[in-house]
Image (tube, one colour):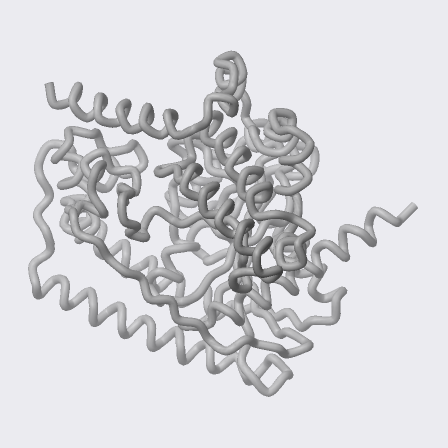
Length: 424
């Protein structure tokens, strides 16, 4: 009965979201079925489902849209409608939205257009620019479920609201960057497409005149973190880490099963016990110690950057794989490290996996059992065409600095690709 209940609640939520999509934007069921059989639904496939106006508007960059909106070259309603249409298509073929606010967004766009017509000036610097939010921000009238069935109808499992303060660092305007890079964290090596993506970025930055340095000592620190993590493996398998207990409790509340990727950590036969206060305190102290070590190391890079300052940021994979396959997301260390340190990260696209280029090294010697499992999960045919994402990591409260650096990285990549296309 409980299983039926959670499945019914999930189905009702999906139906609720579908009802918020205008009927004229709904796809034919045959197209949705076709999408489910495709390995890649971005690019050409989703573009084929959009009209010319939607494609023209949604292909523009944010600064281009802002310029058009600020000067009356675009009206807010057309821009918002285009992005809502594209999001509606993405939802139907990829089930990627937890909440839909199309009608509210379009009504706000109408208000902005009326204001612009009456006053001949925009309402603020981001006038008419549509945004999406991660499902961790509490907004009045909307669920914050993060995908938990038990949190449907609540805001993060609670019925009260919340707020989010946004802090920013000073904008960073150095001309020549000095960036560190870490192709592998020494625990789980990246698959061939990701390693190639890293080399593309390194080469592009060097060609653009920026300094790039390998930060090998950081690998030792990552390995130390992983070693400590392994020390907690026995505790983890008993479901005693704080997050495991919370996940189990929320899923148990609705009867929703634990996803396969987490079943290796959470016992299915008993309710996990939370950490004791002393255990939690010990982990907190160890985390602080690790963060201090990493800060000291980051500062020490001044000795070899050649700029008189430490590295401006560190480039590393987002994950050891290209776009994740179901049940094959085995290692989270490349993003866990930033969460642990409370560092700033920005992700960016680089390339796509190519089965003709990204050939696995048959002589590769795995670093450990987990690395071997990850390496054996690589299938060049299966990953062909999958996007490869990387990240640039900065220290705490460096959001604007990292956005600036990311812009420079993307510019360097685009220039390198343009130069390559001009070669005979």
